[in-house]
Image (cartoon, rainbow, N blue to C red; front, top):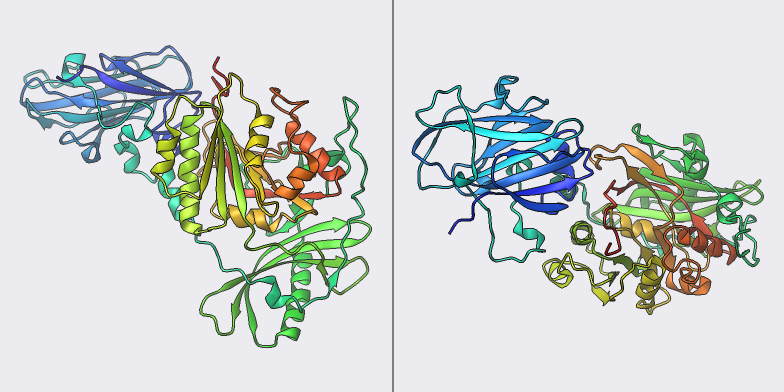
Length: 562
């Protein structure tokens, strides 16, 4: 027996201004905030800033030619299949501006051509509706065979039935059919695939170790002393120990605002970058004549110690005699103040094969966890990096079957710790998760759920983590409401230190996150951790990352049961 009505999936706090942008959002169409059923295709919610998808099967009461009409406030589209399969649906009506409930004459795209439907058959139907402000409604009407073609009546529940997949459970996000509206567009997941690149081949340091002499490197801006405690602490890691990194080419988006330019990396003058690169290339050719040919200068970073000199990170794409593929030469070098000669700073040669443990914690954030796992699967598949693992600390989430979601994907080796508690604690959950990492030579990287990560993330972490010397904490892009990586608008976030790459030995040395001061308190635990990092004698690399995006998201029901 068919169940009457149509399923409605709703995304709250949604700011998308077009169906195209809706399709880019990582939670669409699989993971709505609200699931409900409607018994008529004339719907109002009396709310603002939401998106909804109404879908199911249409059952014509008679055989003949039908016309459809669409009205909404604000935007909407109507898709209809030639049969019961969503993949055969086509756009038959659309509205890109608001109108009133009974006005089907505002735009010629509101009314379909005549479409022949057969009684006894069912047809997949989908309506997408975006509501920003003001009145909110969407109405779908039809003109049945025999009716005047300019007369329309709302499609009732008697002619609708639910799309149901009995093979899956409620919290299985694959139970929702793909949206034909998005399948026809350049969607978020398609764009991710095209931007996901395989891992480059890196030249090992041993192959160029004789190019420069090795030199001691002890930054003058670091001092060993006990961190102050209590309310008088001044967070010196940000005020006194922050040294900006200059980069070439510069990282810049016209639509991403920098509110704290003093706390982010700066643009490195092209002449300074090329001069340092030339010094290294000249030394490379002197020690290995004819072996290496530089194809491209890829990246230069500089961190200036006002008293001692400049630490550079240089990356070149090169040809190596006897090899058929291009190779990445990626080295840290130091230019002492007043000197023209580069050297390799001791303790700052990155480990190309360092193991990385990604650390993620959650409580009832199933929709975003599924997004994270999809993102990670794409990166892992492209990079084929077998030195990466994943540790998940789950507060017994009730909104997803985590074991099932992990089993269906090709992911790095994963360990799950399940803990039941009423309240989420960031400090406790991350500390317990990091405790699962036994090897002190492994880099742990703490993560947030609401991110898009790039395919380069694993080596980005390795390049900026040095055991006993430095940790990596990228500056990410916090997207504005309704914005996506395909339309990056928002701000750089230099004040958040939730993403941190640090060797396990150094995590243990500073004592991890401070559970005593930040047990169930949210905010400040990352600053406290960074303060103890610099007072332990280490520095941190703070770089704007052009491809780590944090999505704007609703905070309703986050972390706790209330």
